Length: 335
Image (tube, rainbow, N blue to C red):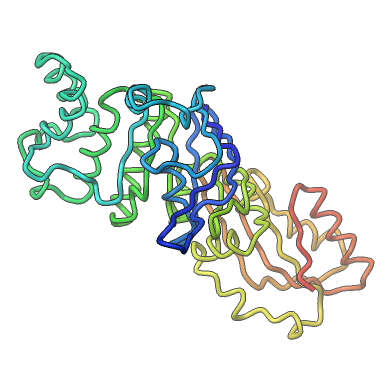
């Protein structure tokens, strides 16, 4: 659906230059919800704005349905943008226009008839549960209601792709959850491909199928959400996961304070529901000290983590670790 190849974006200020995006390669599948996460300044917003050429790439290619949009002229780009909706962190609504007029705006630009616009906007208002706000102005709406208006406007022209640039970061947790539920419904019912830019791991956990982690303009890790949670490869990924867990592991666990072998377990899906550790204790001559643990409920599965101290002979401890790995548990030895 979306292929990004060797994409870079540089900004030049006089003699100085800054690379916001550096040689990024990504493939985003049709109909998936794809997350791009990173800290402020990681380059994620610049990257998403290159997808619809609100920012012009310095080098590289972007293909949408096998069409190289970086080579399109202005008129061809305008037609392509009709198939790419976008929602923003601060909603970008027209303050002097009503909810109806905000949603109707892109349809008016396309020269749709008055009857078509009225029917389409009424349909969208019902879809985002804002029928009673039809004649209200943005200043009369809550943050969540404003974002629902922005989403309705973004899908008014039946796009193939929806880009969300920090679309939930200005919202409280409960409202964020409702907006994510709406976006998931849009994906499922209309088959729209959604690209989510965020710095909130809660968003990735709740809705995304796959996620790319950006750092200093580069994609440093790319995987399914389940595998990122199960076995993060980079410190950046681990820090985002830790932020979800109110993680105190680094504060309380110093390997030199323990006589046994410290291990971190990560288990996915059905493995998270099995008494695997209890079975290991019964099967092998070891004692187990549980130091920390949690289970994260993801979009389509669960990922659990445990940090354990295994106390016993070297042979029994290694046998227990082998058993855990055979039960489809990822085991990381901490010392």
